Each structure stands twice: as C-alpha cells, then as structure tokens.
Length: 458
Image 1: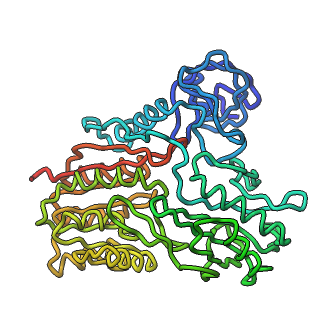
Image 2: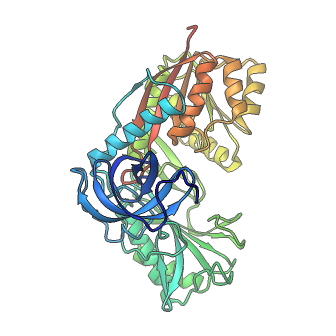
Image 3: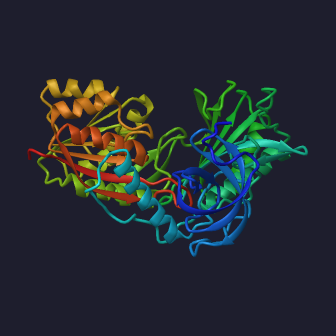
C-alpha cells in the first residue's frame, strides 16, 4: 500500500463531512485524503469504515452518525436504501437546491476557470415528487413469480417495486398490472445468464396533459406467449391505454431496445403538450420525462435567445424538435440537426402537428451539416446546443467559433462538460453572461443548466 495514504482498508475512523460529490456521496478528508461515503451530508460528524483505498481517494461506509445535518430527512420511499434510482431522498429539498447550485458553481470555477459569471439559484419544483412520465423497468423472477423494479445500486439485482415516488402514479399502475397479467399467463422473465425467457423490460409512457397511456413490452423473442389474452387484459385493466407496443431485442446486451418495434394494439403514438406545443410520442421517441420543468428550461432558453422575429436560429442536437418548435414561435427561421433519423422523422411530424412551417430539419452530425448550411448562405444569429452528457463534439465547437453567431444558448445536462465547453467558447471570443440551473430530476443528483454566451466583439 502506498505510504502516503493515511488510511487502510477496514479502518474505523471518526470524520467530519465537508462536501457532496456529483454522485451525492459525502466527502470527508483525512490529512487531505478524500473519502467518499454514500448517504452522508456536509456538516455531519460520523464514524465510518474504510472499504476501499485508491491512490488518490477512498470509499467508506457510514457506521454511526454522531451529529446530523439540519438538512437530513427521513426518506419517504420504503426501498430507498436498496434501490439505485434516487440518490438524495435523505436530503431536504431546500438542501438539494443548495447542493446543486454549489455543484454548478464549483465545476464552472474548477474545470472552466469561470468565476465571475452570474449563476442564479436553482429553479426547483413546488412538488418535487411524482414527476416522471416514463417508466422502464427490468423484469426478473423470484420464487417462480415475476418481479419488476429498478436495479439495486451498482448491481443487476432487481428490487421489486410496488410504487416509485418520482414516477407518475399512472406508470406505477401500468407496471404493476402488466407484471401481474404476464405472471398469471406464465410468461417467463428474461435471464441474462442463460439468455432464456421472454420478457426483458416493461415500459409505460404517460401523457401528462392528454392522459393517454402507452404500454411497451420488450421481449427477447418475436412471439409473446398468450399475446391476445394479455392484450385484452391490459385494455380491460388500464383505463386510458391508447397504445400497446412490442419491441424485440434478441441480443445479449444491457441496451434496452432492439431494432424491431411493432404495434400490437391501438395507435403507434400517444400525444402530450409542453406549453402550447403538441408532441406525438412513439415507443422510442426521446421526450423529456419531466414536462413541467422542461417548460421552465425551454422558456429560459427562449428568453436567452432574445428573439424578435427577424432571427435565423440553428438548433444543434435538436432531437424530436422540442426546443426548435419553441424557438420557431419567435424566430424568422429555425434549422434543426440531429444524428438519429427516427428523431428527425418525429421532429417533422411534430412541426406538421402544430402547423409550424418556419422550421427545417436534417439528419446528420451537427459538425458536418452546420458548415454545409453556412456555405449555402445560412448565417445563424443564435445557435442553440443541447448535447448529450458527454457535451459538444470538439469539431462542433470549432464550427461555432468559425461561424461566430452573436449568441450561443447552451442547454446542458452535465455541469462538468458544460464547464469544459464554456472554457473553449470563452477562449474563442465568447463571454458567459449568466447560467440558470433547473432541477429536472428532484431526489437525484442530476441538474440541468441553461447558459447564455455572447460574442465579446458585439
């Protein structure tokens, strides 16, 4: 063991926690050596057991709390300790808001070297429960019966779940009913080890505004045993069901969906609205899981874009057109690009659904399509990016710097990659004016941000 490490595995030590990691672990330091401990909060004094020691940091387990944080609360969820779905139910909602704000400020300073930017308090929810409009849970077997729920933290053991407090109640109803129906007809759960069994996952989607429900059965086999009887039972037991879909995934993989999707009963899509924009949602559509907070986030993006009706806007990573259609209400013209062909089909369908004609969508990589548009005379006044967790592709950032739009509105789901990308844009002549964190996923460690950048020479 490296002599510089001041603790050993299996040591019991008394510590004071001083921070939270982006995964929600408490951070204590022993002679400057950080120890990460799940379920511990800043300000708490505790006895911990050291369970893992690396060169630069270690992990511990909470043994006894001597002094609790005033922000510590008793989690409402009966399976919180075992389930890996939420990380912060033991922290009051006010405490979660402060922790997320600090997380954003810290990474902007540490990774982005951006310290003089205005970071607003996090926009949270009035009721931070029951917000998710999509549930997708793995199915397993226990003592001959089907179980369905989330995986235990850092494992593939399924915690059977009767209710999930961050899911819409309708999704709970669907998961429980489908689990029971399939179990009654003897449908076997998929087994990862043997690669046998039929039912891999159950997915429920709920249109919060429309009340429409979609049930998706993800199976290993093209045939679903007792398919007709199961469909009839689902229709009878779940009011509001508009669509029953099967997706076939025959591969040995952790990826949920396979390539083949077919409608077993009802419609191919259900509908929902964010603000005044209506969306058609298919089984595989990417659609924000918290529509209330999505509107908060997109309203902020619209505010930062500052559109007057004369601007050309480019939406990189446009997905099914959610931000594009919001922007199109105030812009002269919006161009959206996205690498997933099905998403672009959805985006075109959603534009037509809303009678929005001043948008144009194209399939491809943003860093290839946008320069092509630029050469053909499309000069963006505002460029909006909403990339995946890994942040913007470096060649897209180079494209932005060479095109020089007056404003960049950066919507991010990962503060660390946001900070990295803001640094690159700042070095290329942009100034980060302000950052607005939005709590899209209460009770978890995730935080979204909307950032406004303007060119220094404007």
